[in-house]
Image (cartoon, rainbow, N blue to C red; front, side, top):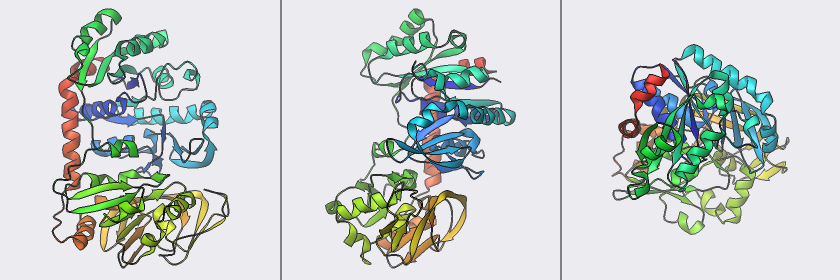
Length: 460
């Protein structure tokens, strides 16, 4: 069976969700499939089942398929903490902070890792579905590309082009990308998927025949616009989610730190119809919240300064304030933040909020762990990604739940315990069942709009 590359015509064309859906559909049809992206650029990450850091979309896909997630599914991850600086993660391990442009320039060094990862997946799976990145034929970048042309040439993958109707350049985008592909790859293009179709766009009604007649490319499907609404990989996608707050009885405020991280922590809350989740930036907004969450941070000292400048210190240190602090947020609650090696900033000692006793010290090496934890009176699955060393993995005090562990809200027992202490009327819900339902509905939506049989025929 051949592997499959999903190329897009722009950055926001829907290739991530199409790649996920096709991976899931092929898996449901009995094929042994793995998700893959050679190089991801993100502000967030997850911990794979083999203990490495990886991008959220590939981790989410593996979890949905019921297979073990692996760093091999995302061998290169650039986890940005600023527009110019990134944490370079190769094969799941951090190689420290780098200038982001140097990571783009040095892709020849990274290619062996990508090749090795894809090859190992091919030895275990029948088909690897490789999500591309950006525009695959950007001339200034093609020679340094890892996720598009390199994979397609090295592993002779079949190619699907994904384009969106959103920007009004449907036909020119498809034609431009196809014509600029290396000639030897054009024969591997099996068709086009037009994503994000809106019913009020008449020019797409006969678009399929235009593309097939003018460009000689098969249109595999025109997909009506639908959000996946799960597996959010960044804050922008999560904040675009339309909550149903008609039955909300508890208001939760997440402090929207400038360098907020691991936003997947809040997915179980934003989907909960009894919770109104707000991302807050002003002190006046906090007064409307029953619970505040101090989230993860990529730059703890800088985000702490932002909080203090914004007037949040008193409310965060008040023992009357119900507060959940996670990872970087937990670190901010200590007496002092020590950074002798300049891991995150040039400030070697920064006063914390002192709601938790002791100091924290940042180490050069990133600590990662995934497993079962006994915290807050619950046994729950979670993961850690941090540079700070603390005495305890979690601290429970009056009105305070603080921990280095991500993923705590996925545990129904913890959610029920926490939210019933705020409002005894809170009923709770089955988050895993909800997530599975969302995935199944999205996959069915794609399957009803795309010629999956034609794709299968090209791959087998």
